[in-house]
Image 1 (cartoon, rainbow, N blue to C red):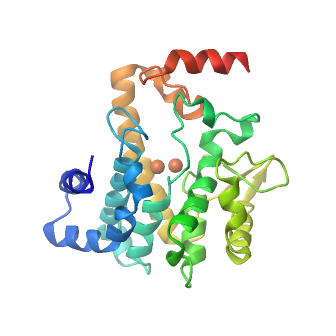
Image 2 (spheres, rainbow, N blue to C red):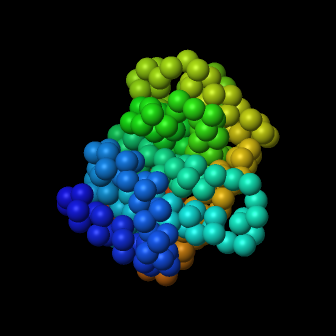
Length: 257
Ligand SMILES: [Fe+2]
Ligand SMILES: [Fe+2]
């Protein structure tokens, strides 16, 4: 599918989430540059399924649209925050490296590194690598901290000296120390439990985005549960999805390990 078709799909999403034409223009101004990148386009393809028929890219755009909508709500309207940064956090929040469902390459040895706990770290590393121009000013830490803690109250894996089993370890080694240190620092913030950190983003931008992710995901899970039964929610933690290709091979491989 080409960029134009993906653009059409995105406009359908923006209509679905009720953004006016004026708002859609502002939204595109914020996301255009991120959207056009080949790595983002890849995440809009069948290579990265998310829930049901939705690709990962569509999920990310849904979160970004919902984030935009929330910044318009009266609760946040009076607060002091930067809408653009909140939407950028949404565009980066799930840019993890590999499709996580029914994919043996995405397996890890330690369950504390499972996709659910590890993917925000991979996402921020990829964001820094694909879009270094977003990590040069005062917003850098806001974006990093927002992406790392977007899953709250789900814990995030922290850099505590244990194996990280990142699927983009090489990319991590390449990023500037200044940014690496911010990622490590943010991953260790808040309540530390075993290999995890459990805390909300420090900044309102990250918190709004995290809320948007919950609203969008709950809708997706409800659809999933409606279509595939209550156990479909386990996919989030096991990475094995009965309703996608390669299910049987993946189950077998998983058992053999
Ligand atoms: Fe996520
Ligand atoms: Fe998400």
